[in-house]
Amino acid sequence: LPITDKLVAFYSMQEQAGSPRHSIAHGRAALPLHEAYLNLSKASSATPLINASGSSITRVADGIFGPYSAQFAAGQVLVAPRSESPQLHIGGRSAALSLFAWVKKERHVPTSEKQVSMEFIAGVWSESRGLRQFGMFLDLQKGKLSHLIDFEISGVGGPTPGHRWCITRAIGTRAVLPGVWNCLTLTYDGQAIR
Image (cartoon, rainbow, N blue to C red; front, top):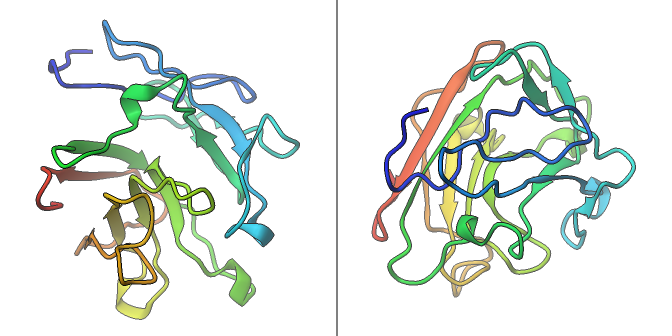
C-alpha cells in the first residue's frame, strides 16, 4: 500500500479469530491489537480482559482490504497495550491525528434499555482507567444524534474539567447506514476536530 510518511498504522483485519491484529503499514512496526472482552454489566469499572472467554472476534468473508473483516459481538474489543504500541498513544498540546475506519453496521433493534448505548469504533479510550485519549463512537441513541459518528478527544485522560463527560467532540451530520460499508473519517489538528 502506498503511504505517506506520517501513517502510523493500517489494519486490514484479515487475521484468524483468536489472533492479534497487526498493522500492515509498509516500513512501520506491527503494533499488535489483542482481542479482549469487556464485561458490559460493569462497563464503568471494568478492565478489558485480553484473551478472556468470549473475546474471540469472528472473521467473516466480507472485507474491504482483502476477503475478510472482523465482526464484533457485544463486549468484544481490540486492545493496544502502550508497552507494545506506543505510537498509537498520543498526548500533549501538539497532539494531532487522522483516523479512518471502514464499518458495516448491522441492523440492530434494541430489545431492552440496557442494549441502547453508543458503540466504540476505534481509538485509545478507557473509561475505567482514566486513559481517555481519542475515540470514534457510533449511535449515540439520543434522538437526532442516533446513527451519527461522534469523535471525542481528551487532553486530560478523563472528562473535560468541570464536566461529567468529555465535551471536546465533533458529531457527524450524515447517518451511518446499516448493511453497507461506510468510510468514517476524522482529523484533529490540535485545535479543532473535523
